[in-house]
Length: 181
Image (cartoon, rainbow, N blue to C red):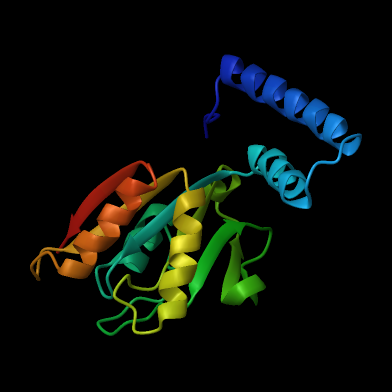
């Protein structure tokens, strides 16, 4: 698989990481707030995070089926009734495994080559009955590099989809809309 970043982008990433490290060292010698220090530490950590693809949409729009097709194997449960009731963070791992993580987010690993370059978030439906799922989805989307929003051609575009897409736009995120049958 080709590298996601070219040489110039890798150099820019290195310079940015170095500059943020210097800023962190300067803040250590000042009366900076804990909030500022935490925000800077998060920024440095996120530089090394993999590309984050968030797959969102209403229940039964085909999110898990799309992810399985992208990965080339059935990793996520699929069905005619809602099957994803939790948020799943899919990452590369030597073994296929699933463990509970923080805040009710499940971490699923698999030895799939594409997961060495990107992490994928499989979300419950944006029309989830449990508001905690919606809140967790809303927590992931602002951190995403790309949101893939899947909607079904079998039902008209809903108000909850419109509202969610408006939120994504307000967060300034790149979005790809996929219409699934």
